[in-house]
Length: 317
Ligand code: HSE
Image (cartoon, rainbow, N blue to C red; front, side, top):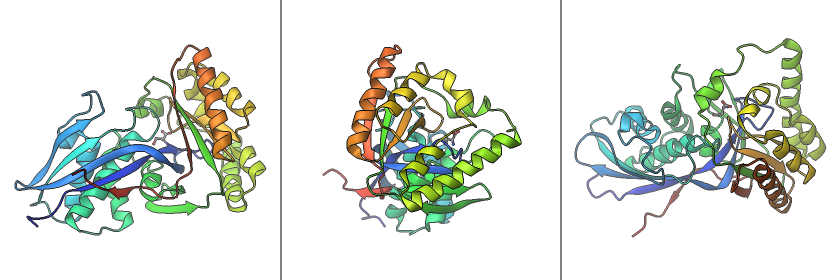
């Protein structure tokens, strides 16, 4: 393998939960995203040569970095612990921004490492390795960002079968307006503030909305999709951490969005829209509402839901 060329992979931003489906639904944007390059090295184990675009904040010790942990998992999964890999990470996504940044790094790392080692791991194994990078302090995983970053499109994951990804149809034109205010919210903290139990009446409404969203996607029924985009699980508890949340939501809906909510655990907010043109109008209205709430200069990203997830990219000459 000594003449093996470096491999480089891109994995996109993702929106976890999609409002009604806490921990079970996720979707992929076309861009932005993170890139990871993998190279063979002579010493066994994984090292990170550099992380770019993080302002020096992410650990470069492989065992403490999501991309590093995910790459270590690929070596273990392939029974190649005697092989050495050096990775380099380019962060295109913000840290703790609710845009699936750690999932993108982990997924780009496993795709690049799998290509470098020519191991052709199954998509279930790739998902498992990437999830290792994201494992929370209690050992739990919630692959609603990892799964769409790997597969693209809109996907459903079920906690009882965490490796199984169920793709859902993407109605033609379905687009995302993603607005990232310059704030950070730690996913683990935002999980910690949620109540452990949900009243049965609320749970019934929530699983009805999840089911309705699936039917709405299958039938490209915009009105059913719109009516199903309600979050009784996380939004009531998390929204107070985002200045202007209600005004931004109202602005997005008044500008024509089907639904507006938190992207993952926030602070980014997103809107689902029928077309990219509509999503551009909605994104501007949401960013303006953030500015009126005192959060100037929120970044906006508009993309159709991308049917392609992580993919190989050229290594610069
Ligand atoms: N479903 C997760 C949450 C998103 O809302 O906590 C981050 O993976």
